[in-house]
Amino acid sequence: MRKPMPAALPLALLLGCAVALGAAAQPPKAEAPREPKFVDDDAVYKNLYEKLEELAKAKRPLAHKKLLAKMKPGSANIAAAEPGRKALAPEEVYKLAEPSVFVVGSVYPDKDGNWETGTYATAWVAAADGVLVTNWHVFEDLKGGEVFGAADRNGNVYPVTDFLGGDRTADVAVFRISARELVPLAVSPAFAEVGSWVGVLSHPGDLFYVYTQGAVTRYSTHTNEDKNREKWMGITADYASGSSGGPVLNKYGAVVGMAALTLNIDAADEAPQNPARRKPVRPVGSPKLSRTDEKRQEQKDDKPKPPGKPEPQGSSLQMVVKMTVPGPTILKWINK
Image 1 (cartoon, rainbow, N blue to C red):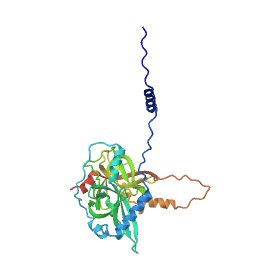
Image 2: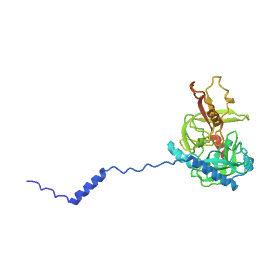
Image 3: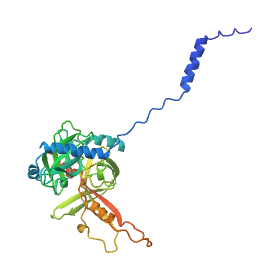
Image 4: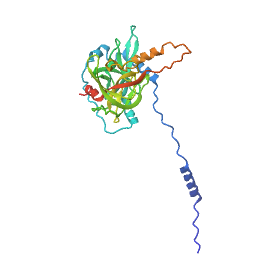
């Protein structure tokens, strides 16, 4: 016996199935790529100094003489944030640190009373109530009447209102700005292992918020001109003039160092120099030129040699050593 044929499906149902299958076959609509934050270096620089000049005219920053009077060694008596235990990807470390990194800059009056741009460097947040950390040498060799302020990533500029402590030999300075509800970076109480990963977020050479990566190379000590013993942590992550005070971060996003010095190692026919006689450059930011910048300018201004006698012009620079303040040293001058 022949089996009965199944009833025909309604036309509307068949059309609905066809539409559904067609929709499923269509590739998903591509989303527009998410743009990163593009840094306008000229705008950052202009904004910092225009707003800092306004603050200086209003006498908002800590007065120059009071700043110098407060620059005495001692602990800032601040409770530093404790490091987390979750390892982060390098891009996560950057996102964590970016809101906590500032540009610290200065202005000073000229003989006619007009405000001139001074210097700039990098600073980072140690406490939510406006406490920042940078190098001690950022506040040295000042012009008469020079005063300071600091700008965050969004362009807000705050006056420096107090100098809280630190130490010249350690190259640590702790100061306060008139800001609240900041995001502090944790400071590691342990020395980073030689060979371990580090990242540096700083402002080298008029380029703001540059993030570089590398590793810890060694720990070294050196007797300075004042006969005091300095201690340094070497790293391979790049930084330059303007990076002074930049935080060196580990994979947990904690500060394990702070950018302070660079030392150029040049090739020479003569015997190697005594390391104690080589003077490292403390990379405070422009517009004040570092020794490296001055040397580059001198080379640029040299008269060209006559044509017809081509001569290879190789650089004598072999290596740039990056020397940073170790995390436990920083912690010593921050903590209660």
